[in-house]
Amino acid sequence: MADLNDIAIFVKVAQFESFSRAAHALGMPVSTVSRRVSELEQQLGVTLLQRTTRKLTLTVQGLDYFHQCQEPLNILADAERVLTQTQKKPEGILRVTVPVVLREQAFLNFVSDFLKNYPRIRIDLFITNEFINFVERNVDVGIRFGDLEDSSLIAKKLGANVRYLVATPSYLEGRPLPARPEDLRAHQCVLMNGKNVEARWDLVNGKKQVSVEVSGAISSRDFNSVSYFTHNGHGIGLLPFNYCNDMLADGRLQRVLPQWSSPKIPVHALYPTRKFLPARLRVFLEALEAWDSPFWNK
Image (cartoon, rainbow, N blue to C red; front, side, top):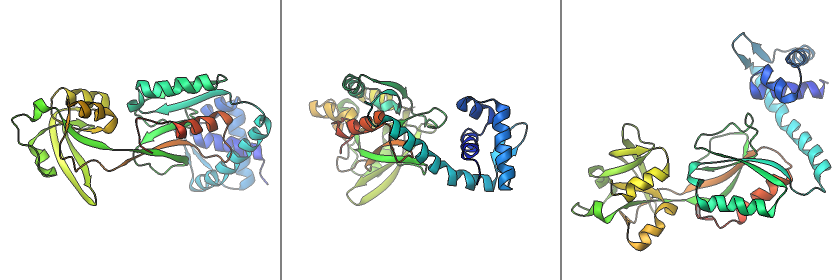
């Protein structure tokens, strides 16, 4: 049977696709890491990695071996960690990534309260719309809005968000109100992630579904700015409910095609595949589930 330490070294090299970065993470010389992987290949009788001067890639056999070995190694590491930390209070650094939509006081208050409840935990917070590689950045947990791509991450559903078609009374004044989704094509729309200031909006009304091509004078990459331009009368916006509920209540915004909205957008907490959770991650997930979040409905 192959040496378990050699297998662990190979898995780390495969994760980073680099001998040098794996060696840095393991605290070992690059030459030692390379030699141990070569010895593992010799013992198995297969080539696990294709090595060139510019790139390191897994062979077909190497990819299969990596998938078979990664999870058992995680379980072994977590089992050892649980045995040594069972009696400890939640502590240590928790690396968290969230999208820009959570760069609001409500979420920051949640983090502040969490830190006060668990003073031995420290949080390293990444606020970005980019999907961070959990392995490379050593991320413990992330919050994501929308459908998930297939991955090795565990997904815990927190709730769902929905977006409404809204506009200011000043924008709608003197313009014909849309009577059906197709009428949106005749209006200026404030876009999220538009291409050439054009976008496709997917809308639902009960069991009815429709996709409409819309355009406008402004497109952005985050809802803070999309919300700003909608609130300032630049057109019809498709905004998450947390960006428009207050203004709908006081009349500064009004619903357009109120029977239509976006499909429900799932919100998940993602964390690396593991059977045993570190105490700091476990209590953070519990706090997220218990939180009465303004960003999603349970």
